[in-house]
Length: 189
Image (spheres, rainbow, N blue to C red):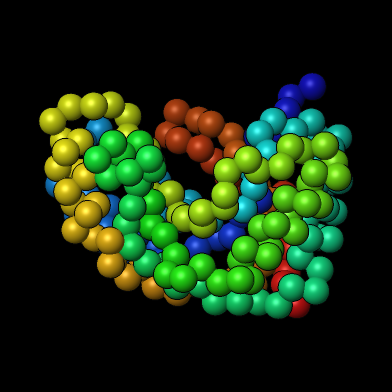
């Protein structure tokens, strides 16, 4: 039985795509080897589940529904470029949030708790909300330049998102990168 690589996320929408694309263009000047995320695929992950049997997908979607129950839509401000583990050794390049709201923290905790009831392990690391822009594919001379460019854009304004739904996605890795298929959309009310 084929498993579905699954995650729970917030889609970014058009408001962030244009600014993100501009930032990626600026960061590309480093000539570092980076696999950039296409703007239309940008998202903010609340929980990565990994491979899930198709027979468990309905339970996962129901758990996310319970986690979102009673949560109101909220606004997030996408702001500042950064990297994990840091800009001197960038592996994952991202846009962060200006003052992450209590609403997103509460939503993430609820999703994590509901999915723990299904046997998914709790997050070990502290939730640091971010939108992944790209992953560094190799070393080379461009890495230091990339780090400097990231540091120059720590105050980058990437726009606002009105979070009105949470999406359970399946991710299929293909030759042109991952393809994301929504399995369930849960409205915040």
